Image (cartoon, rainbow, N blue to C red; front, side):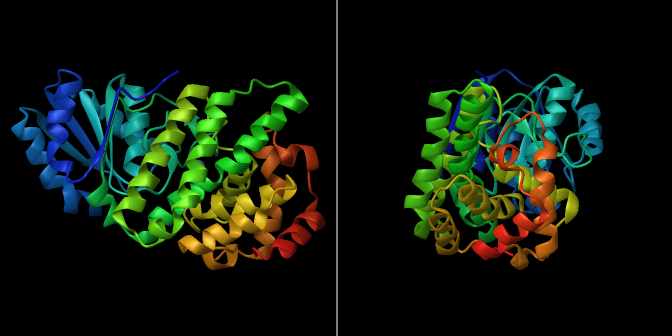
Length: 342
Ligand SMILES: [Zn+2]
């Protein structure tokens, strides 16, 4: 099991990042990897906290989560003892991969809650050989400032909600893989991932309103889902057929929609194939204010049909309901029409 050593969730924590880092390990130099906007908003308060804790620091602004960016970050990181990923998914993914390459540890300081990479060992980078997330090491420390996350754009939190709904079908796919192809199935990790979906379902109205209590639940659930992946030693509890459809859309309709938005809608398709109550999933997305159709993301019906057909080939060895059913183009389109998600 690969888990974070320390997880701190609370208000106004950005000013304590330096002390938290020192608490976990002796460090003298920290490289802060962040995005342009987050860097402008929070770079100064984090920088001050590092200086006050006696840490020298450098700042690296990343625009997109590519392997090239991560390699450049890893080169720069060799002069440092620790990397701090400050921001949404992109800087944290780059920090995770750069820390892996540079052989140093990293801290995850999310300022939005758009997906479950906050505390997980998985990193998802563009221009990767694999169009899905790869296993790295989890952050050694996670510092989640609820006040900062509550002030992030609401569509990011709604995307995080969609990424958590996915655990309903991801765990079902994992169980199916045990029954059909004898794959290892970790019941504890599966239950933990499923719990993260259930708890955000119960709090969806609060999350949709960006209420701080709701955002705290969302953040804790995203951290728990990442921990479930750390316990399983793979992304299995978090990522199933719904993620494969979303990954296929990343290829077919590049740059449209956030990860969790695509995954949330795809979960209704996976749920329908599993014979589960897909209307409940769609209603939950609607209640939280997340998109309920791919059209809202600018993705055409035809592209969704193609993505469903392509999805099993994204990971041929990760058995899911799509590998069992293998819908053809006409079946995929009628599925999309039946659910009304085009
Ligand atoms: Zn995901």
